[in-house]
Image (cartoon, rainbow, N blue to C red; front, top):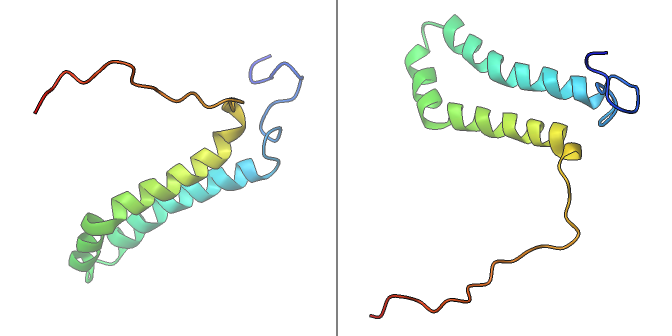
Length: 95
């Protein structure tokens, strides 16, 4: 039974309902659409290239990561108590 979790359903709609498919489509559109727009319009290619180099890759990655986080957030465990690191050793550097 490939792709079936312990509760018996396939998992496609279990965590986020129909949003899962919507998120996947949104990620595909955000990734593919700007690149096709750049390649289709040869006249404004230098302008698009500048925009891609300045903002395009980072904005695409940020938008994709936002959708991916919303998609996979139910699978991360939320800890009840936050563990803060406490530095108990004195500093080794004296200035």
